Figure 1: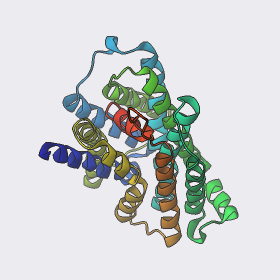
Figure 2: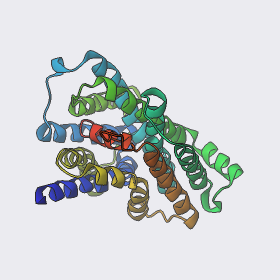
Figure 3: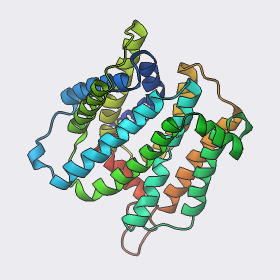
Length: 317
């Protein structure tokens, strides 16, 4: 019992680490640039994963998983890091991060549509609440303000577009790989590939200047550690801890992420923003409840949320 509680606690540390990623990526990009900073983060994270998780034998991986898994994973990580790096301010980086956190809702909806996951009617208000929450967040200090939201998005369509694309891509990744990964762990080679693609992009762009400082190195170390050790901690929690507790806690990452980013990036957030953030979390949780299994006569089937949580023991989220 003690070991299970300890493992659950370690898994909860992963939630905190992942919640800090938006602030960490933004901190690095302000000194090292959007592309160069992201390349540095994923390079260091790949090194940390190599020594903590190890490098598996790629010959043992299903070929389809190596192709589709790597393409979707790299595309998502680039959308995530660059959307935050290209943001015009700390406040905008937080908003972009909130758009990215639509992925839990999209993932559960994708599981229903493509993996024949059973669900009840709660998925409809859950999806609608998440969408309403994002509109509320993007409306600025006015809350639900569609003209204001459109003006906000028009101010930097690249960042917001990348964030939304990332959320959809990660939902596709989770939906596809759960069927073709065959339980394999591709996190280390996928991080290496992400770093390589980012460095290639950096070289093609001509290499934007990087300003190295103590602050930049601190943010870089923290960002890479949050990604690498967040995965390692989550792996321990999911394999040996309380999966239901961890799955539920993961849905509060958007609120925790916004709180940490607001503190570290000195970007105060309005009450309307927090209302929207809570709506996003609430919508994800409603979708989670919608896909929770009901007891059958002889057995109880696992919920989509629990299976998704177990899937994260193989790949970083």
